[in-house]
Image 1 (cartoon, rainbow, N blue to C red):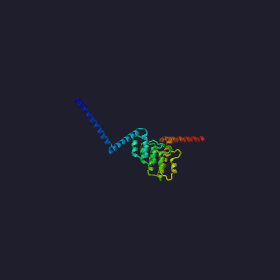
Image 2 (tube, helix red, strand yellow):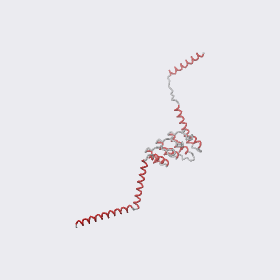
Image 3 (cartoon, rainbow, N blue to C red):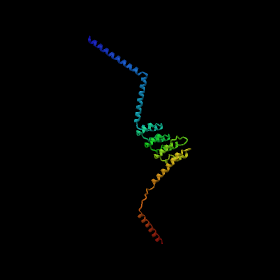
Image 4 (cartoon, helix red, strand yellow):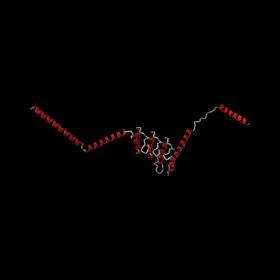
Amino acid sequence: MWLGALWDRIQASRVLEHVTTVQNNENRRQAYQHPCISALAFIAVTLLCRIGSETRAQNQPGNTDQSVLQAVKNKQHTTLSALLKQRANVNVRDGRGRTALIWAAWQSDAKAVNALLVHRANVNAQDNEGLFALWTATERGDIAISTGTEVGIVQQLLEHGANVDLKDKHGETIFSLIAQMERPDPKIVRLLRHARLRQHRNSDRKRRPNMRVRRMSPQTVLWRVKVHQADIHMTTVGLC
């Protein structure tokens, strides 16, 4: 009989344990169904999914470079600085061949232009139409639409080696653009003209041969004068 009583006690303990487990699960389910806890759980899951997607996007090649263009277009200077510190490609192009520097000049964003130039962006890069950063900055420098920052942008581009003689795909230079503008900024025109004179002067110096003037001693000068006089005398005698 004592075995039967022991068996009944074991069965009762199992039933009690099962009932306790069911009650605990029910309490947990009810707790998770609370509005506050459900909202917090939804927010946590959303944040985790977003962090995971951003991490995967950053690990994919090329996305960091394209983010440079997006940061410039949206004028997100903090994001742009962070991307440049990660050594992102500053010369990345969009579908029309425009670089981040061309976009920054078109938007008259002096901060973005400065940041890109500091990180050695190609100042003379041209898009599919042959346009470049100096062209777009000059075009935006029209007094009718100017924001007042174009003069500084043009000066920065020229200081970093912007070529004023570049031509678009139609063969027109930046001075052709100025001639077509209704009210070009006179400060920009003055900067471009001085830059063209300076660049032409430097190119002429490179084309000339490197001629050095040698200093002669007085004895050498006197000897050359005597030789020259003797040649003149011999020529005169021969003619006579």
